[in-house]
Length: 194
Image (cartoon, rainbow, N blue to C red; front, side, top):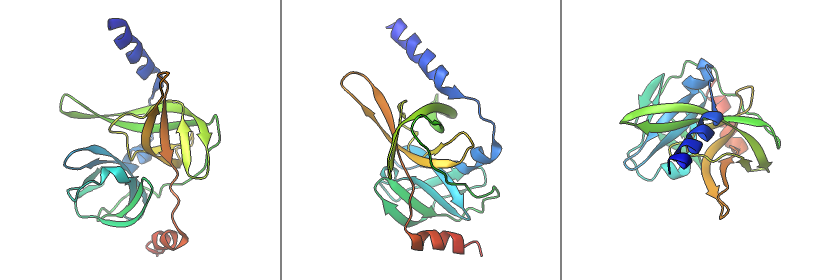
């Protein structure tokens, strides 16, 4: 048992990255609901995106470095992606959205609760598969990571952490969704800046 725990710890440490980009850290917030927690990513103006499965009730609290909001307006939902308009006045620049291809390195911020404290660690993986709506990463995502941004090497947003898939052979892969908003929603986000 001690060997398994040690190997798990070594694996986790090998995945952790030390990323000090303060703008990226400011763009990542924490989502708290009655029964769960996860993350959200600031996009532009007062819009954030998160995983839809985190929104099981109306008691949603978003906490970012620039502010806290518990009254939010859901603008758009599709699959496991939800776009929310908040009342937070963000001071960081808008998030750049990009694409990835197989074998690209990707990074995500994993939110963990440790002894009643929130701990946030950067993890690194590689894209194992990508299509028009999904990115599969060669490392699992863990509970609390849902809604976190999946970023490329340049810290551009490429996906939203959704879930992990564990197979009978013990292999676990992380599944992220690619945020694609209909043109009228994108125009609204862009238009709010004017």
